[in-house]
Image (cartoon, rainbow, N blue to C red; front, side, top):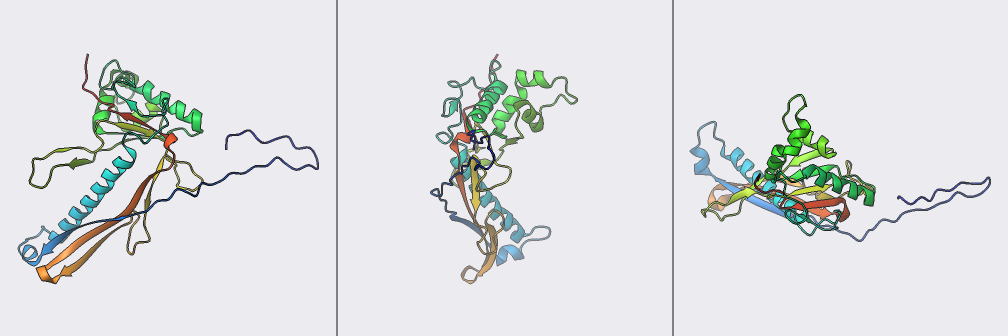
Length: 274
């Protein structure tokens, strides 16, 4: 795509020509994940308005499916050993590859923009998304270099949109989902799914077979009754236990498309220090 192959054409001669190939070897499969909650007759009969056990069960099931999808997204994209777009062609590790952004002497804006320029110079595509955990977002919002840049703005408050303009990306996304990794009735262990990490990537504005992108989430919308996420909710009676089952399904696959269009900052956050 970036080879300079067009040539001056003399009269009555053929034009220079070329083409491109499509790699049809990658494949993906959208497994169906499912979860259910049973609503028994006694529970339903014992509930007074505005309590609605069927609605509550639907929300509970939907939350479980979305949480699973988020965890799988993090495992596929927001982890080490996936992206090769950095200046070192591997993950940038806080404290080794760069000074962690909780340190007042760190240079987060320069760290990110350096990687943006590198990816664009190597691929022709400028990273347009910056994704980070709330811990990293909090560090960036309080960082002296960021506060110094925005002190003369109208509000003087660091927002995601303002950070995006400082970093030179279209969008800064703060991934706030949390997960309790403890077993039921065990000692609670809840934390942000995205840890203390950040990711820079190019995401194609419109999905296309000819549109390079860091990754896609494929969904099986052909599943009967499925929505855009490959999701559906069913309700059917279970006579043996005198209950209605609220069951949800979701079929999707997270797939890396171009590893060179992403940069991962592992351990980007640390506590502030003087």
